[in-house]
Amino acid sequence: MKARLIGAMRGHALLKMKSDALTVQVRQILKKIVSAKESMGDIVKTSAFDLTEAKYVAGDNVKHVVLENVRSATLKFVPVRRTSPASSSRGSSISAT
Image (cartoon, rainbow, N blue to C red):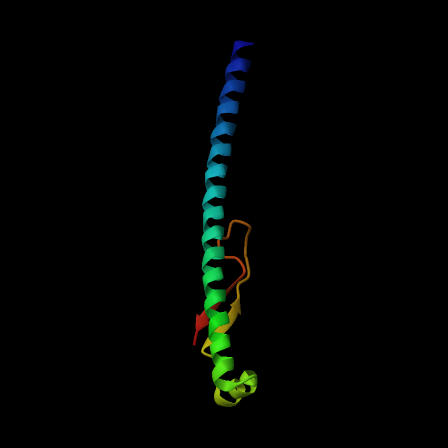
């Protein structure tokens, strides 16, 4: 009976350690998500201002002016596929060409 109690206590301690480790990992992931969201907010603000500035300079036909003057893309959107659930890359990436 004493051996079963000791085994149960040891098992409980191991599960607690595993739970704590997973909690730490989740918090790290959440920190990355929050920082990414904050940086996206700054990027959206900057891009909205840039679009307003371009519309002021070129008029409302910005799309046509850009399409006429640009020959190739400077940024390329590359989707990233996840190979396993443990993979840290998720979503897509943007690479300069």
